[in-house]
Image (cartoon, rainbow, N blue to C red; front, side, top):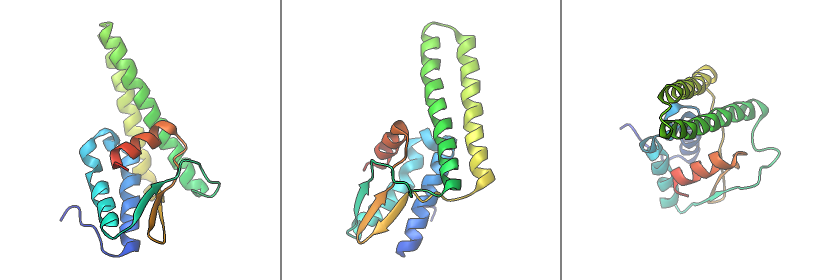
Length: 155
């Protein structure tokens, strides 16, 4: 069973944070079907009568410094890839295919840097936490990344 969701709250929370860390620090961030296991995990929380919420204001103690550094690095890489994808579309419309190919290669390098970062550090960023029947997604201090995560998780 590839997407087994544990019954134990602590294990389920760890799995959710691990999967979200892996997807944010990976080129699969842009692939919708890779978000399916996270949605299955959230569905399990809902079936157990938990309410799922998202913080929109960052708190000073949301993430430890080492995890915050990785998160900022990942968000920076993702933002660069999004910007490069937009530029690729614009230069392709202008039929500047060599420039589009160069931008594509740069985007692929940013994706590889993102994946290397995750493989090198292999840590779990605690994006979610639980308080009495409430599962909360911490604020990701990047509007576009936070909005994309919310959309993909269908919160």
